[in-house]
Image (spheres, rainbow, N blue to C red):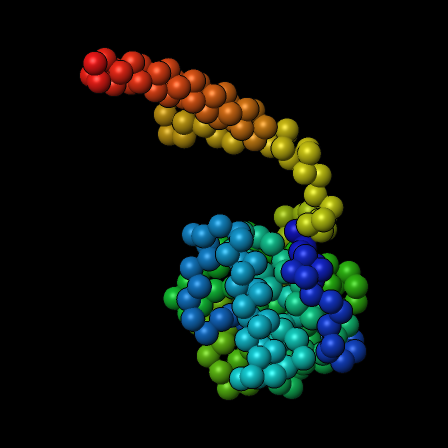
Length: 233
């Protein structure tokens, strides 16, 4: 599970009351489409920040973002109020169930990494004493949340399947140096000359090409100066 803690967003300890949810996990969604799957991961971070700002603002005046966790389309789990705190997510189950909102709306389907993130979160919480049940927001309160598409996945057991298997990785624990040199970027995608290179080698090649272009521009600039000098004679 790729877990992004509150501190990564610059948030301090939540002011939400202590609670010990044990019943299970409740699925939520946003009331409008977000289209985050086709955007950079930074857009998910911005969405999470904006959601907290809305929840703590003048309209709702909650002490914190309403959810325990969020699952983004790129497969990351964002910490909201986190473990052992009451939520403002599902009346009737705010102290007995954990909540996770999928960062999507009624016209969107969850991505495979997003579904896997929910499964990983559930497995992690079950390892810390949470019950196995998964419900939707509408099971607690008269609402359309989490939408028909997500609610079908709640009912057919999609979220209760075991994750493919991964350790918990907090964002601060990622070895950036290893990723920089060992990760692979597919080049010339779709062409016969496809290759894979590390981010470091790609940047080095771009820097080399940048130097070549700069040298060529300097050369052309010198020739242009010569031509202008001849024209002024």
